[in-house]
Image 1 (cartoon, helix red, strand yellow):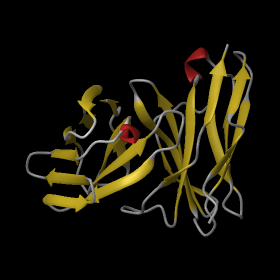
Image 2 (cartoon, rainbow over the protein chains, first blue to last red; image 1 turned 90 degrees about the vertical axis):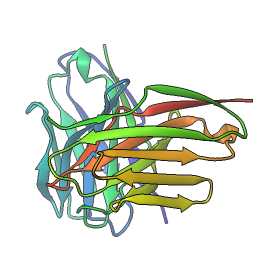
Image 3 (tube, rainbow over the protein chains, first blue to last red; image 1 turned 30 degrees about the vertical axis):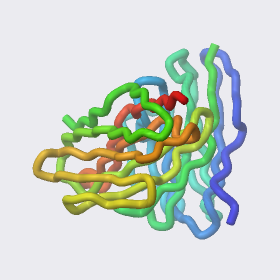
Image 4 (cartoon, rainbow over the protein chains, first blue to last red; image 1 turned 90 degrees about the horizontal axis):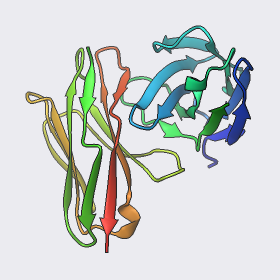
Length: 114
Length: 109
């Protein structure tokens, strides 16, 4: 069974640009969550999508948005990039995304903003 | 506010035992997860505890005390491949995961 895949793995952008990251969940998983990981901060929850609907949202500005397609693949978009957006962006999939469902993480996209 | 505390870094010797502690303060509680993350890789699931007590899985064990808001991950017979970050995450009343910053475990020969 293929794992969670994320593309691209690495990105370098400049301030003010926008970026789109993609996540393909494990087959049969309908929930996709996005996290930002920075050294010393741990994983910060961005949002969760289930059946094409945003079901939960963390405390990030509106520059961070996402969507989910009918095949459960998800994209995350960050507009007007800031230096502080440099981080590892992880997505995780689970069957239902509720409670005790184990989350399976992708390898992440490392975004560097110059 | 909601908070998870775990040590930033720990060092242990190959073959030894190490205990990584995690304390949590959350709005409600629906369980605690431990994940392992090797450098440059995705976090992988290790354990989930919702009831008090110790759960053992091979060389790894996880303990939970709900009354104390405390958990630990116990790693026995340490191997070099156990060098990684260990992430603690608590599930709050809304079933949202609150993550700690992770503990970097360094294993020395």
